[in-house]
Length: 173
Image (cartoon, rainbow, N blue to C red; front, side, top):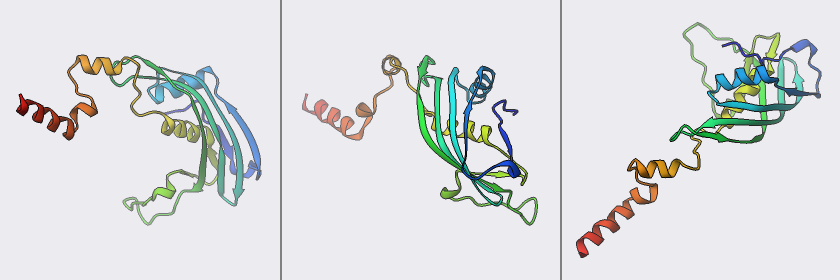
């Protein structure tokens, strides 16, 4: 998918310690909102410091965003605020022996983005970091009432201890 927030930076033009402030315009926010299945994205800013060692670029900073998601129960709008630090390491694509060879990534490699040796795409990496910052199960204020109306038990009501207590109460009557 083409991402309008793609801020491509040439490796040979990145200076160590360079600071960037990226602010997504309305069109870019709309594209990212559709990509992340958001109702809207009213704000997206990233304040970044770049450091470079050879072909490895480290981007550290802060994402500030105002997304609006759909409640997983009622589909009502749920406003959120994201203000989180991030650290992304851009590294050259690893050389593999063949097309079928797999690359194993560990937990420490989760914030690694591979580049082609010439350009990094900072904007897309920031949009991906925003996606990881979103609540995977947003719930509106009316979600609990909707679940109760549908007959879904709460966690407390469905716990083994609650069920045993209910059985014991039934045995006493």
